[in-house]
Image (cartoon, rainbow, N blue to C red):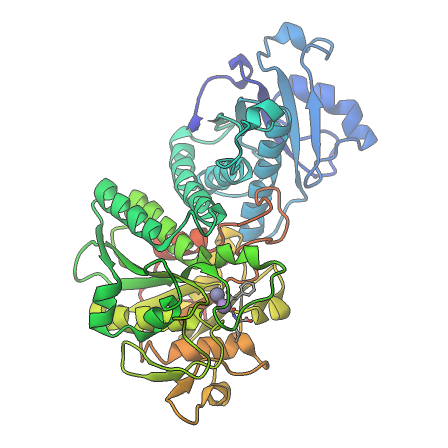
Length: 515
Ligand code: BES
Ligand code: MN
Ligand code: ZN
């Protein structure tokens, strides 16, 4: 679906040949081909195409005087604006993703099957990163989910682009190939997250997480272990069992291990795999309830990131992923408000609201994983609270952590991925809101600081281990409209986690985090 070439761009016959141009304000655009520069002279001077972010300009070689004689074999030439030169590397990376996403979308509009994309010279980034980000933008922007459309999308002419060919421009081909490979792994993982999330509650069941985990184990030599309901009962995972109690579909706890050397640090990932959240007996309103099929986006991100990690094979780190998976349904057997449950670590909890279920399944997975794998750091991802949408909207993921170095590494990983995080505080004062009269904890802390009290609940189950929690309820779907993020699930968190793992610095050592 994506490859590199070193052949002269104009000699390649494709549907569209893409060049990027920055908004430099200079006399001519910074397109590498002198003939195309010439053709652009008038539109550039008029400001019809000035390289602004999101701008596109189409040239038909057959219509442009002189060009048809120059052996340009592409059906069309597409210029895509990069916007103004950016100061920060993370902003430059985002600029490339956005422009590449715009190119892919335009390709879909024009029913292109094959596009040749020439890397720009004008963005000040190492060639590898440049290729990585352009690749991500192309693949993420080209995403479609049409599995359940019986009429093929091709008939509507909106099928995805089949093949991208990356031309290195003035960059070294080997660096470009390396960057492209990493970008492809990361972007395809994020697309896998989107695919899982797009599946409805009757399609993506807990067992599907198990099947995916087993496939990764077979394909990449990871270790996959799946705990079923009976094993959870034996282990005393009262949280997952309580959430599953009203359901006709059995729960799963999927555990995937990427192992290097024993002496290497272990990072533990936990993702909320709530395949449908009706709220349970504390039923949610009907309007918009269908969106609660997305309540497994944290689990999806964690699992899909493991595939990219298995492909990239970082040498100095072990990664374990746990996904507690169940739906949350009301029924005669369902957990009731007031019920008291016992978590894996023995802590008891009074269920005030059965709709605060994410923390219940995460608590067991966290306590079990911390005990079993003795990780050096823990990161969980969850669509945990509506409150984070009130606080941060759809443009930042909430980050809460008991460790500044881990928080710093995550902030940086999110910045590199174009998935910004914003840290919120934790603290004793907030934890008080979870005090119960009859149990160790209650599962809701009232309206104030709902995202923080939810994180406080989780904190009870990680002990002293460095831990960070990402509340992706606002960013997992209907995320900031971007060229490379379509409507529906964004795949958020997947690439942040991949970056975190690939740039991992041991905690407690100098350079372990930017804080
Ligand atoms: N899955 C929801 C959180 C959510 C809400 C995600 C809206 C995305 C959009 C979670 O299980 C939930 O229901 N949380 C409750 C907690 C409350 C009962 C303390 C919430 O946020 O309302
Ligand atoms: Mn809920
Ligand atoms: Zn939920």
